[in-house]
Image (tube, rainbow, N blue to C red; front, side, top):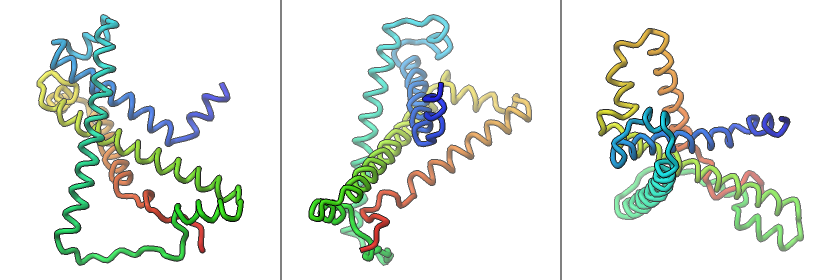
Length: 199
């Protein structure tokens, strides 16, 4: 029980698993409309192992495809920044160690504390990057889901006017918090190559 409590204390892990669950539900919605001719309610009313397997495989394919698209966008952005003139100036904190310098310094001086910091920081950056891939996959799946008349999102939007004020307010709060969280996730400078350790 104590381990479950610790798991929920780590918001990053909780957000990550909620994102995986959301992506699975959206995948079930899309696969149900595209291949199974079932609504998501029908999938859950009569659970079929073959349906769950198709949804799971489709989820992996959706996520991998979105990672490729995400990386292609980053590559395109990189090439455009080289071709197009850019007058913006970014402050690069040169007084801080880069991760490569930190690793070299840790190995050279046999500094275990600095090496542990390097490993933990690189692990956090990788985790944040995976969160971005997953959130991007959810955005793509949500866009695809909106193209089906029987999808969950379309049912929510089409019935929005008939909902009670409390339900409308709940939906608006969820949409606002999700949008705000995605904005922070995609604009934060946590993927910088510089550490917080001064030279």
